[in-house]
Image (cartoon, rainbow, N blue to C red; front, side, top):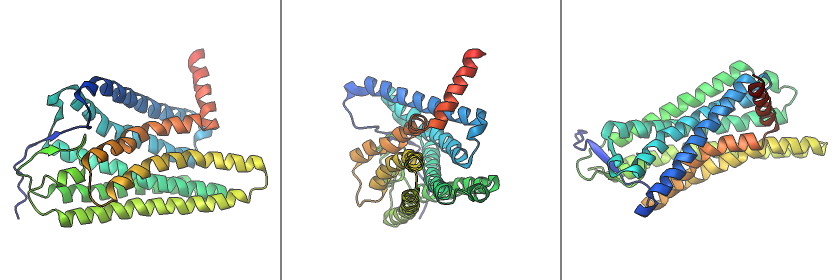
Amino acid sequence: MSNVSLVTTFILTGLPHAPALDTPLFGVFLLIYVLTVLGNLLILLVIRLDSRLHTPMYYFLTNLSFIDMWFSTVTVPKMLMTLASPGGRAISFHSCMAQLYCFHFLGSTECFLYTVMSYDRYLAITYPLRYASMMSGRTCALLATSTWLSGSLHSAVQTILTFRLPFCGPNQIQHYLCDAPPILKLACADTSTTEMVIFVSVGMVASGCFLLIVLSYVSIVCSILGIRTSEGRHRAFQTCAAHCIVVLCFFGPGLFIYLRPGSRDAVDGVVAVFYSVLTPLLNPVVYTLRNKEVKKALLKLKDKVSHS
């Protein structure tokens, strides 16, 4: 079968909403995007400047902030263009391919990174005396690199499987971004095999990572309950609570969209906002408001700026 595509431009329908809401939604999403980028940049800056935060946990957090900053950049600016004018809904075939690749690359890398972060918390709480030697700088670098490489490979599979199909007819993508499920509906060929491979691929990654995270936290809770002092237990729970909140907000909507039979365009678009727009904002909010060490570092940075 020829894989030559006749469609050169796709049209993104955007989020389902009344036309009168274009301007308010533009304002809301622009504010969220600016806060997301500034918040994650602030975390990167604080961790870079404060030597007390040069630990494995914050090393992985810098990776997470970097991912979230770009994850938001891949989706929100184009969403703002679709809200600003009808002409902003158009996206070229190759730009659509690039957006899908970047979206899945950053999303799956984040998925792997959450798993590594839960493993890091497990080692820190279960083996506090051996933690420093077990999580050496080299080990951290290897784990972080493996998440980026795995995300890249996983995304390449999604992108190749989706765009190897011919697109010769309708070109309206029922979404605010180029994602595999709505794009496959436009293909001029049988997509059942491709859909099944993508379903299994995403399912294995998402459910596998989620299961490992759950196992890590079950082990962590068991270890925390064994801590004798109430102060120690409280501190351990507080360290993990922030991570749990962000993980649930990321995995919940993702599992809902990709691991259920059938696809409802309007519902998928609204649910996707949670993990593609709100979760990147949630990361700096949760890690700064719920973390005493980051708060101290922020105050220290503020004092430096005010005295300079």
